[in-house]
Image (cartoon, rainbow, N blue to C red; front, side, top):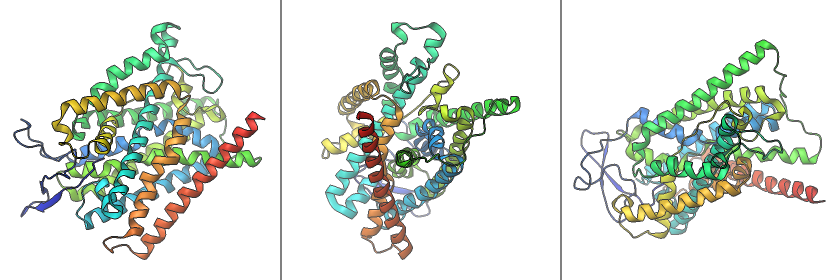
Length: 438
């Protein structure tokens, strides 16, 4: 997520923008100064942008979606995924339209244009909380898959434990330490989002491979007659089970969050006018993957589906990839070093911030019990602000007088739905906690 904005000057006969850098220039510019780099960056392709945005969307949320089906049932679960797709598309369209009207090229710049300095600071804080929360979720998943988990009360062996038995070197803490050094650290060394296009393509391919594996196993079990018909509707028997329905909202919100990355990807596109098509293509593709993964994952495990569905496979599957570290680094730099030189030009500051984040994420993954808990926090706070409340607030603020009546009505619906769902979620969790303590 960038902090400032830049002034685009259109070149004659070109669909791209030439940017004049100033003290408010974005921290991830389209192209570095020629003296600063030896290889000129000529802009990201449409396919590369789709892969990067799809990676932002899919992320760790896909692993928790089968568990949402356990709560909602298949019919309501699939309907909510489709609803979140359309709602996310509408909120991103708000961001793109109002950014274009104000000639703004960053989410932070848009919030600053609408609400001043404090709007930009709020965005940076929410972006930081969301990205760190999701990175912790990734680390928890790595621990679940490689070292196993007992968060549901039943121990599910991880890949390493299943292969070699229990040893100190395949314990959760040591495995997460090696993952931090060997996976997160190399990815965090890149300073430009397009540098991650190949790992992004691999990430999306692995998500599809995960779907194919679930589909193949489900078909095999269907043929062999070992699959029980899953619930189509939620099982609401008392007030507690009713409140539980709202616990899926933060998970679905987090699963579709990509707003903080839209401007960054648009800034790196060869043709920035393609960003609308990039968003729609990415959302449609990810929604299909989400629906199929949710349905077949729940079909396989039924009411035994865990918050992290990979743990249900025990030793059968384990792979994960991420690159949100870069965006977290940018947010911290914007909050604490707003007047400093652009981040790509300061290796020391970049290394200092990145190291601190890696330590924080490592500690969080060791102390937070499950990804469901992490999703509850990030989805109900930072993610819902980034995805719906902030875009809706910009629309209602309407600094450039371009919002239509239907835009304002939809913005109000977004805010009311977000606030109401989270209030009910907090209340329901409080009631459940009190009952457990009685």
